[in-house]
Length: 179
Image (cartoon, rainbow, N blue to C red; front, side, top):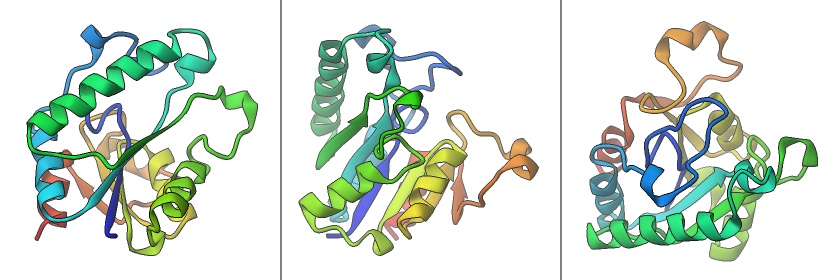
């Protein structure tokens, strides 16, 4: 299966801001053309996985039930737009927990690879932070950094890792992957 991993906040939906969380359905807003991008990738035969840190649950900022309802609405809206997310993987642990699934550790990608027989060396990871780039590199996947979330091109000299590709948003990345 050819696969694309997507971070959630700042790639699919509007980035809530540093140290802030999407804590309700009302605060979850798709980025422009994100649903269209996922539909395009779906039509091109990609297995699409969401791999996202959601430590707000572990910190008690919002409940697992809230995260589940946000996810259900996101998946429904994507399907109504012609897209399909194969599976969503979240790390809800706090940074201090030291788990293997919190990005930049690659546990979420490895779990998907085991469950769906994904060759990570042929996969792509689209994210909006250098942490996402590091996650991709940890498993030999190609990294795509988009500038519709946290990271800015102007910060390039401070990056601890270089992305394989950069695009302004998920739709531009999807057009590249669909070629």
